[in-house]
Amino acid sequence: METSCDETAAAVVERGRVLGQSVATQIPIHRRFGGVVPEVAARNHLMTVLPTIEAALAQACVAPQALGGIAVTARPGLIGALLVGVQTANALAWAWHKPVIGVDHTAAHVWSAMLRPPGLDADDWPRPRLPFAALAVSGGHTSLYRVNGPAELVLLGRTLDDAAGEAFDKFGKLIGLPYPAGPEVDRLAAQGRVGQVRLPRGMLGRSDGAYSFSGLKTAVRMHVASQYASGALPTGAERANLCADFQAAVVEQLLRVTLDSVRRHRLRDLVVAGGVAANCGLRAGFAEACARARVRFWPVAPAYCGDNGAMVACLGEALLRAGHRDDPFTLDAQATGEVRRAATVPAAGAP
Image 1: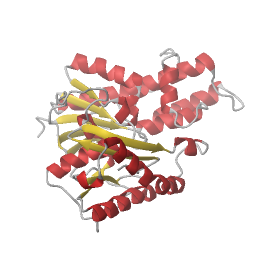
Image 2: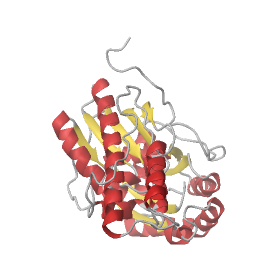
Image 3: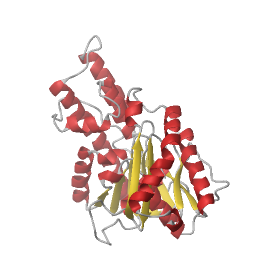
């Protein structure tokens, strides 16, 4: 079960195979506000959480008694939204006599690389080899991890300010695009030409795995203010070119910082997960760069890039098999917090 932000989602997963899933999106509700309103999100989760669970079970043709456990996003996220999911999971775990597992939202995105891709009927499919590097890139997160197992993610680097997805949304607002702006920026970027607007590439040349997008956002604001007077906004080819240059700047920073860290930590597999991982420009750029660097690239299937229940169930199942479970009388939501057991480590060969 996933209720950390503006998607109410549930799924039934068995050994990485998605048997049934359902998502109730709130995007149309929040679009008129230009972003997610936490109280509105929580109230809508209350109305949709049980029907969403019932729909996932019905699609999977699975009765509650047949479930092995209940996994739920417990952190991080909007506290009111998280509470709806966690308390529902606790109640169902008690009523159905099932173990409950509280999972980390970012870790679930990372572990979604273990899901069977949609449309693939094989019982076995290629998956990244442990340990692997994983870039979680979304509206709320831009972090790079070394993944040693479902319960052990080691933080290698993260954004110092805006997340990449947040930067896309703020950029979109600056040029008059509707929320969420990411998909529209990606579409327009494909129509534009890179190199028409000079935008900075932040954090290049550093070796601490840090990302930063606030300077890029400021550069766009200054460009729009200097080029378009009296509140006018770019349109047509000018807007497409600006989208192309903005997206290229974001992708280049993600690429160079991530692959530098992957090289320093001597990892051979790279997972890219989260909502921004669905971006076509990002996927193409990483595929090309990873091929040159001889790093195996594992982009999460677009169907599982956004918030969904399958990623939560997949990680929950792995944790349950490893012996992890929580008490339904004490499991609680946490609005903030790093991935459990995360720690920074020196690069391979460092003292």
